[in-house]
Amino acid sequence: MSDKNTSTLGSYVDSAVGAAQNFVGSIIGSTGDEAEGKAKQQKGQAEYDASHATAKVPGATITASGITKDDPNRAAGSWNQTAGSAKEFVGGVIGSENLKQTGREQNLSGQEQEARGQLSDFASGAADRITGAVGGTYASVTGDKTAQAEYQSQHDAGKTTQRGAEHDIQKQAEAKQ
Image (tube, rainbow, N blue to C red; front, side, top):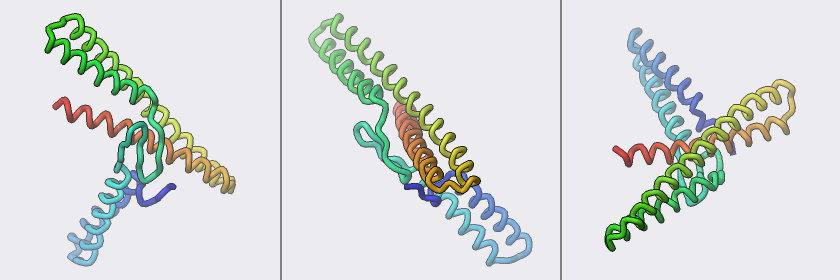
């Protein structure tokens, strides 16, 4: 499912080339080069946005690179947070300090469990991306098209897994602000 149009590195290259072309065009007075440079910068931004686009569904992540299953600790941790919050609320309503405390503890335990799952997904995704990139390069040099496709698939799955963890971490950080 690899799509070269969703490469973060490619987006940086297109943006830099576009900025340089725009700059040179403005120095030499070439409106054509300026316009082409601006278009390349916009293309780079669109590639960057596509590379980071992520959709979350329960237990999985979807990106332009594919679909991956989340670490089970992420969903279990989220459920424990919800159950803990409910116990804490009910304990407050009925005046049970024991139930409130149990709820707080379950909520905190769920937060830690979800964080472990996110860290696991982020690390395994990064490792798969690196292994896929290095292996794909080696397979390309040796001309092994089958291995190259397999490594590209591993890279893409790693990218999706990593983007899913990044998405959830960013969402949680924004909620705390």
